[in-house]
Length: 173
Length: 310
Image (cartoon, rainbow over all chains, first blue to last red; front, side, top):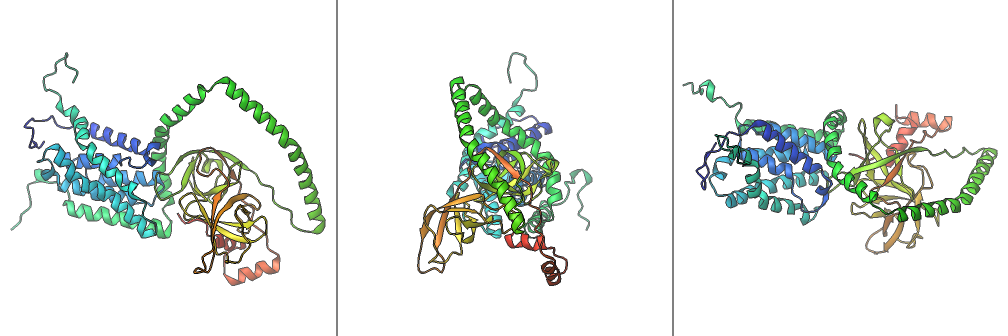
């Protein structure tokens, strides 16, 4: 585990089942009917970027590709549209991993924003290729909100790794 | 010199190589899916995994919905029931009359030697959710291959045409609404009998294209299916004209229509059985067969309608 700039705390190693759990939860959130509202972030893209930044050796482009295919089928969009976007985001995340983790959370979010924007842009370009209009600015609102959620997401997803090594039964976490 | 790392530092292929591989794979999938449409089997296979998850994701919304109706007051339900009873009685007379007229019409058509109109039947399906794509106007209904739904079947609700089945999964089917950008419905103006084709615009409206500027079209004109495509049964309401812009710089009038059916609402719909192929007279059928080798009369007709590309 890489230590970050702001905290010298050494985290526990991540449990693979928790990564799987968080990714499935994000997939489920994406399938919720709320996702047609304008500005709702692409949860799955956010979590894929998070894990590819945090654990580039566990979550890579292969997983991103498979999850993207699942999104394509569920969305009835062109096969490969989400897959391409997620693969690029996962690559960006793992390539920038060491740099991003060096910054405090707020500045991490700033560096993650282009990756999330890339996910939307790639999908837009795929649609432009088969002939579609600009979907309106609300389509690009999602990455903005997701950027603001980055610090919160980091706190939540790293919670299991903050557990103390010697268990204290009187402590909830 | 050999610069291989020791085996315990091995991390698989280089990230850039992996990236190129996956990007190439995605682009290949995209092109094959957009141009050739041969990936339906892969899509159906993957849907066996995603559809249960999607069903799970719909549960909270369904729960809220049922909870809402559970707490609906009994008075309102009674009122609704009384209203339904009334409307049923009111329409009973018309229905009996129309049944009588239909029978009579059939008899007369037989006397005249005209082929009788096909009976329309279908199965009720429920709209589960709409596709998440911001570009597509598509919904998923709960009838699929198991219920012998096939691609191309028309979908109606109690008011008119809603759309057309474009993709079938084992337990679900995808319906493209008539307001989708890639959906076209051949229609006929009720008042004048003029034939045309109505296209979706993707924003909830429809457009009547290729109508000359001097054509007799007025605001409020009802458009019904003409049935010439061999897919939609004739006589079902599709849309109503709401705005006509006759700009002389264009060859055709710009006519906007709004759908008659509750296209953008979630409700129950009816998937109509596919129309039996129209049998051409023998001389004509031979001519068609001579023109393009193996294309049957049915398929050449269906092509004219351009059954929606996915």
